[in-house]
Image 1 (tube, rainbow, N blue to C red):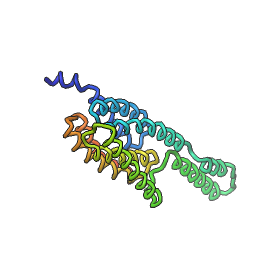
Image 2: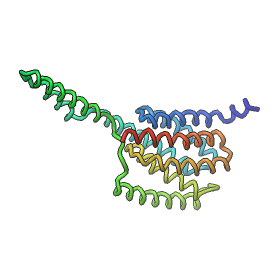
Image 3: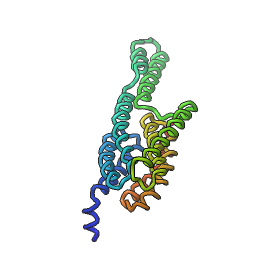
Length: 228
């Protein structure tokens, strides 16, 4: 019985495993979360298509695109800024004669190198008011369009909630790509609603996945707050 269930649901199980790995890498702010996310999204395009969660399937297509963009943003952010290198180089050019001057020169070099190291990687930031207002408006527009599409053109059993979690996930993923701390709060809402929907639909491996997502979101909040 168990073997038959595993053989019938192996694609969904594989997607759940890669999804858990994705969130773990997200918490650690690891660059490799993006290629793992591409694999996970490709798997769940099929899973949600066969389950008639069309908005979620479209969301996975969006994940593929935003993963490539996030990969680029995070890779570009990994390069140290020129200011840190120049400051460190400039301090090496000084050749003071006294011991005190040499000590001050070493401190300047260390400070310049530290600033260069801190500039590596896209930094975690807080959500600004203007950005939050724009994202709220974007969520409302995306939700309305998705809801109308699902109601009129598909046989989705839960168009309202499907559109809700899809719209909120679109906003949260964009915030992740920009390393905005508050995106974890959106994942808490998305994951809790998704758990209920997938239980109703009988997607139990995905229920387990989203339960783990929900719990790991608290760890993400804690870890990212330390990076602020």
